[in-house]
Image 1 (cartoon, rainbow, N blue to C red):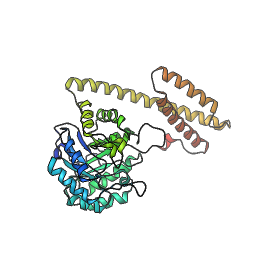
Image 2 (tube, rainbow, N blue to C red):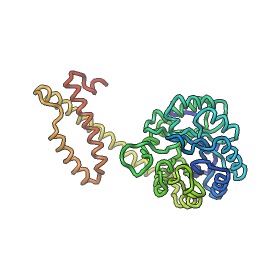
Image 3 (tube, rainbow, N blue to C red):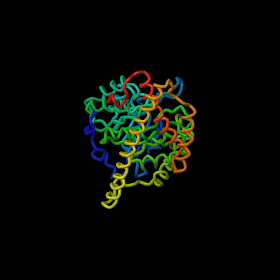
Image 4 (cartoon, helix red, strand yellow):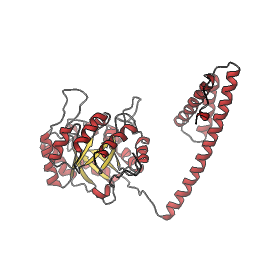
Amino acid sequence: MSSDIDILPLQDWLPTDGKPLIIAGPCSAENKEQLLQTAQQIAKIPDVSVFRAGIWKPRTRPGEFEGVGEPGLKWLNTVKKETGLLTTVEVAKPLHVELALKHNVDILWLGARTVVNPFNVQEIADAIQGSDVAVMVKNPLTPDVKLWLGAIERIHAAGIRKIIAIHRGFHYFEKSPFRNAPMWEIPIELKRIIPAIPIISDPSHICGKRDLLQPVSQKALDLEMDGLMIESHFDPKQALTDAAQQITPAHLGQLLDQLVFRHKKGDINFQNKLEGLRTEIDKLDGELIQILAKRLEIIDEIGEYKKENDITILQMKRWAGIIRDRLSIGTHLGLEERFLKTLLNVIHKESMQRQADIFSGGEKKSEEK
């Protein structure tokens, strides 16, 4: 997919007066009263322009609440007429698309479990083809930007130009305060690949609990995400799905009022200062790359010398000493230990691989290129 893909700018089809797009509503449509009461309260919040609700809920285990199905679409149509809010639902198969379009849903979205399967995505893309509906694509469960990109490409190939990417975090095995680790570098990389695509964050699914919503929402906006999708229920404690991460419309209004909406671009003086700092970073990056290249040249010399003298590649005592020394220097200069360990391990892995290539008689990587 080229960087100049013809995705329509958000403001061309969903005017928000230059503010971030805010989508809100319950995790699941449970009954007509719950949906209408929640929507009527949300409609009083000026920043919200789209109402969300899960109609079909893909559950991990059978027997759990799996959504109300088509009746919920009729309730959503009533919400649209009574509040003026646009509506959005998740679709996971062609029948869902057919029913959602029949009931005038404005925006469809593909969930993380769907995006992980290209076969499912293609079936949905085929069902959408020929319509003018907008489509949002959530990131897959795994931190795989190519899989996310592929789903967007399939929707785009179906003729859809109104596309939004949703960053909802990624499944993470290590201990984390989040339900799904945000891994902000993934949506940032997607934006680099497709500069035209709007990306909104889903703090509800990233956090998994209410008390983290505010800082995560703020960070999303600070990283130039184009909006937020936040789950809101008029009585979260009674919600049939994801009760811990939903907030009341009143709480939602307070959260949005506390957010700082920063400008993406400043005046000419700001731009000049920023450009000067960026130029300095470019210069330093060039020096870093030259230093790394020189370091790896020396690594190759060490590899050749070890091979000639029948010395093993890995010298554990030496490596342990390097870690202690570099961490001491780096932390003294204000660098985070976690960052330093990651950086040193990447460099060490490359160094070991280059020396292994030398020992096996292969060509050096620098020569392969």
